[in-house]
Amino acid sequence: MDIRVTGIVKEFGDTAALRDVGLDVRSGELMALLGPSGSGKTTLLRVIAGLEIAERGKIFFGGQDATRLSVQQRQVGFVFQHYALFRHLSVADNIAYGLRARPRHRRPGSAEIKKRVDDLLDLVQLGGLQKRFPAQLSGGQRQRVALARALAVEPRVLLLDEPFGALDARVRKDLRRWLREIHHKTNQTTIFVTHDQDEALELADRVAILNQGRIEQVGTPDEIQDNAASPFVMSFVGDAAKFDARSSSGRVFVGEKTVDVGAKVPDSEKIALYSRPWQLRLAAPGEGHLDGTVHATRRAGRHYVVTAEANGELIDIESQHAPADGTRVGIIIDSGRVFAG
Ligand code: ATP
Image 1 (cartoon, rainbow, N blue to C red):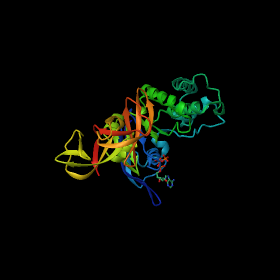
Image 2: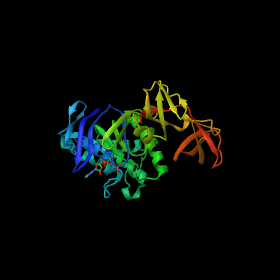
Image 3: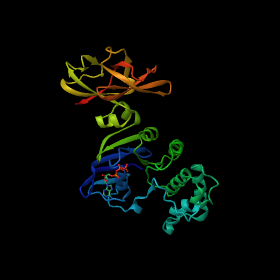
Image 4: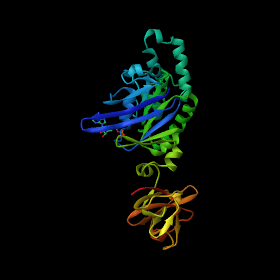
């Protein structure tokens, strides 16, 4: 089901957690809410769920105004960072819980519930663990049970708040791939909160970037990475070096040399140019747009990322070779994105 929020304002005392937030989530889409701590991600999720009531704004579920519906009426599924499984219930009973809690006329029969639990356990690749209790599961398995439980009631939207946040890096990575597969199979409209950009970019169909209670950009992972709408998005998502630049006669200059940014730029004495590591190249000292000193080098797959210090900033540059720390280098800026300085 498609979800639309418009003009959401949510305040906690003096803190404006959400300032005029609008977002469209398409039916069947996996949308990530990505932003730094305190940017309002969890609050937005809770407003959509009905766990928080916004001061202003509206929420629509499939075109229906859901702003005044209770949490139950909204029929959402949740998974939080800290698994909220019932400790005294078996895996099967945890998953069946929401179905059994339904009013009698909407409650499936016990054979149907059992089949649904078995199917969901297969889906989350925990088939055969029906009788275990939460204490007998690993953290990753518990989160998979929590997801099965949320899916059991066929929610109109699945809301995930850092569901893998408490798990170690290796398990997180596996669960990410696994969630992506489950999403392909179920096509369940899903909103996923994370502060981990890799997680958002790998998992989501589209990503909404939050900053200080506002959405700065909504786009596919490619759009967000290649076409950042603001300096914040540019530096929050992926590595980017910032250069002081100016523009004249439509051309961008760093020092005395031009940079081809692929667009005509209005004349300005001060603009900010942001470049990704692959838009930069190493050269001999004096032959680039600026000079720097190699600070560190690490391998990244088939190439290296050289971190150089220039004008007091650390700049990451992709390179085919690994110069020794302390080497003086020139840095060529092949391209980048410009913003008002
Ligand atoms: P994190 O990644 O750290 O969970 P977040 O992006 O989810 O952060 P929120 O939890 O939505 O951010 O918080 C947004 C702002 O609202 C923060 O400044 C936070 O301190 C404040 N806030 C959230 N919940 C409450 C509350 N119940 N009472 C007071 N302030 C709150």
